[in-house]
Each structure stands twice: as C-alpha cells, then as structure tokens.
Length: 184
Image (cartoon, rainbow, N blue to C red; front, side):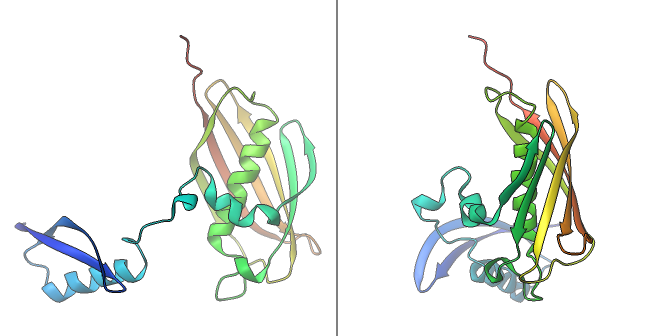
C-alpha cells in the first residue's frame, strides 16, 4: 500500500495549534481524511489541558465524593454510591467511565488492605462486564475482594449491585502490579 505524508494544522475556535505529520494511504479519499481530522478536533483531542488537570489522579477528584466506605476488612472492601445526574449517560444510567473509575478506586483500596504502603501499585488490566444499567438516583453497592495477592501482583474482583433489590448490574476484575522497591 502506498502512503504519503500530509501536514495538518488543527484549529480550535480559530486558534491554530501545533502542526504534525500524518501518514495517510494514497487510496483514502481526501474528504475522509478531513472528516476524521474534524472528528478528533470536535472531540478536543488537540486541545490543551489546564495545568491543574494534569496532576496525578486528577480524574478521581471528579467523583471522589461519590464513594462512601461501607466496610473494610483484610482483602475486602465494600462501598456505597448513588447514581447522580452528573455521572449519568444519555440513557440515564451510570456512565461507563465512572464505573471504570470506581472499579479502579475500589481495587486499589482492596489491594491496600494486603499490600504494604511502601509498594507503589499501578493498574495493569481492568475488565468490565456491563450486565444491566444502574438507573439515575439509585443507590448501589460495590463489593471488592482480593482473589490473589503475591509478590508482584494483586487481582481483585468486584460486583456492583443495586442496594434496594440486590440486582447485579456490573462486574469487574482488576490486576494491579506492584512496583519493585529500589535497592540502592
């Protein structure tokens, strides 16, 4: 397949952003390229983030007030949260990104009941199953339990249920890797 290099300049609200080189297949019509580029611009992919949004763990600040601890035991964590309109999708159910963020927070909290504070954890894998929707204004419970914890990794399984009915709406499984401690 032949390829050529095209220089593009993204502009948002009339303000020019940095130019970049993009490799485009010659067989791809120019209007497709413009449409794809326009899509990314509309979604803000070339917009600059303010400095206070670049801090570590910023996204969790958006919904940190959402979670309330129900109980904490070694290897187990349970939290409560309500589906607020700010975190709902267009179908008035809990947004998938919020579910992922909550799952990550609960997984890390669950792992911290076993893994010492001197080991840094990072999320290596997160799998989610969306079984049903958690409707707007519904209170939910997320239960996390450690499946396995070793020297290099911890695996946590989570279940999201509607508190009133006990209906299972989402499941998640997270693999957290332990950063090795430097030996100087």
